[in-house]
Amino acid sequence: MSDKKFRLGRKKFFKDINRYLFRVVAIKDFGDVKKGDVGGWIEKESNLSQFGDAWVYGNAKVYGNTMVYGNAKVYGNAMIYGNTMIYGNARVYGDARVYGNAWVYGDAWVYGDAWVYGIARVSGDARVHGNAKVYGNTKVYGNAWVYGNAKVHGNAKVYDNASVSGNASVYGDARVSGNARVYGNAKVCEEQWVNTGYVNKSLTSKKYSFIAQIGIMPKKEGNILYKKVYKIKKGVYRSVYDENFMYKDGEISRVKNPDKARIGCSTGIHLSRLLYWGEGDTWIACEFDWKDVITVQQGKVRVEKCKVLGEVKLI
Image (cartoon, rainbow, N blue to C red):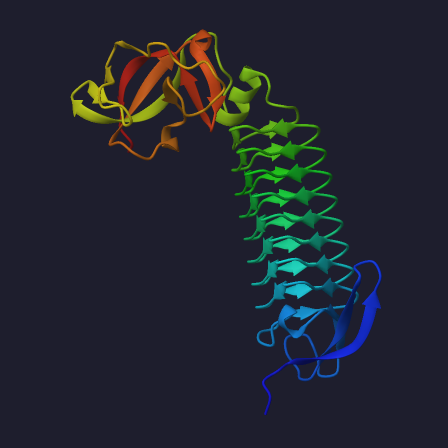
């Protein structure tokens, strides 16, 4: 007895995509599909798994080397093609398009007039809808939402509970995470990592970028942020990345000839929120003046000099 759940039914030529597709017809009950139900259109049997509850409904079209499997559902007027993979509990519907080498999986939904393409990945409980475009090497995951006319592309990542909407663009190596909201005509790009607050304009202003990435209002003098180091002895610490660079309680640490470019990982002293850092065994608090800030990238501040206030112990 065959374990197959569907057969290829009526064949039809579609001028808009210049190829023949077949209706899928269920040959047994599974999920919410009953034996005899007529589904959507696929080009070949390998486009839809014969296992699990995955199904193509209505006027949806699946073709090329696409695979729909697991418990995924494709319906409405959705079009899935190229080398894409739709799986897990994913949903693609409305007039959405997923193509290229994109993957949609987990509990993610792509719907409305949204397009996901390139080698983009949409996963977790993420939602991409409206007229949104997600493409390139982008990753949208967690509980993130991308909608409206928003575009997320390049190597950008949108995750946690973040959202990108309106006419906003997130691209380059940018990250939007936490509970951040990027909307309006905002552009988040380069190495800007936004993880808090509301961003509704481009992060071209160093001050605005500081607020968006660090989550606090900068002061002319006396700003305090943190870094992680290796403790040598009481009040003396060594840089994680330069074993010859030392920090001492109460003293000014200064970098000679720092790189003034808007690049996150370059010469300078890097400071951020307390739990930003990974390597090292000790946190220290550092005070800096706004005039000494070179750039704000990757969720951290790069400064020319700072005063070491001392060790910070986590309770």
